[in-house]
Image (cartoon, rainbow, N blue to C red):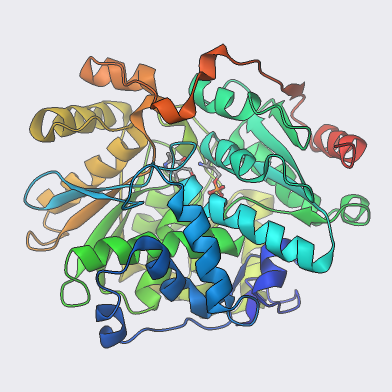
Length: 469
Ligand SMILES: Cc1ncc(COP(=O)(O)O)c(C=O)c1O
Ligand SMILES: N[C@@H](CCOP(=O)(O)O)C(=O)O
């Protein structure tokens, strides 16, 4: 399998190459040159497979040429054998139509573990093959950071610098990052928003002062391998609900557009997905883009769903490229104009390409709290606020008839409620306890460095400290 950049100028790479490269050298994001497709019979043949076997079946076409099926299967067994639930990503029924897909049974209690645990193993495998080291720079609004740190802490060939917006992640999220005291882990709290942190990270990949001395790698969803691993749970859940003989709809709490783009990939591969609902909080650039065609970032407002406090949404570029006819040069011009003005209009082709599959909705804080209350009272489930955004959108679009009543509607439960205990307690009157597997988080020592919000400060810190692990 070969991968091409959304901006059309970086060299095509194989799976090993894109996994280690992260961002393409032209500033674009890598995508498979073409979508592998399963027939209905092939999908039917996946019914009943255990998660590691299913994961191997779904991901095999993407890794072809870089890993054999046996190598991939061995990695999947190691990774998913350690999850806290035998089903890895269990489905929970809420009522006749609504389901939750619990994605938080990994080590750091968020959906990010499903992909990042795998990515850590892939880094190990490919770096050993090449006898290389990797310096990872990443940005997090709370969950990617801890999942990535847990995936690479202690790895001999990898060092990680993780940027988070100072004071804008929950205490549990921060401690899950800063209490990992491994010498190859650096936590940087920077002034500003997640968007600022993400912009610094992307800039480092195209900054010759950095790339001439460091072999940079990415753990954010700009890295294709992240999205590939997330495609699997769409297959796992849809198969349980009757696919390929029945369509299924999903509501996906969205920030960087990675998780929902993985749903788009599943549909391109032949999974019968009725609709993908893009659910945003009040930082609703994606809802505005999909409903009105205007993609305009106007500053981030902190909310009770901090992981989704994002306005510049990395993976939307992948959708604009694919749905817009895969014209790299045109997209590069569109993205450069957006970088200058922070606004762009979607073309008709892009709107039509996206409109057939995607619907969108936004939830304010009151609506989010009401969704938590409904899940608790009507279905006995305590859910996290990000999942609440998704559930609000799911119920709103089902009530409006956008999703027909006979179509099962799955909301992705992206984090464990104990990661956001204050917001959950305010909404439902009870404080969710941290599962025993995260241990004594509040009794541990923290280590982090606070930095000013400008690019040069972050870059100089990384250059000054890389290689000292
Ligand atoms: C708990 C939670 N829900 C939802 C999201 C949004 O996912 P994505 O950025 O893939 O759209 C995030 C962050 O990415 C998250 O941490
Ligand atoms: N919500 C994310 C933001 C980064 O998203 P990613 O999926 O691109 O890594 C977080 O929790 O850090």
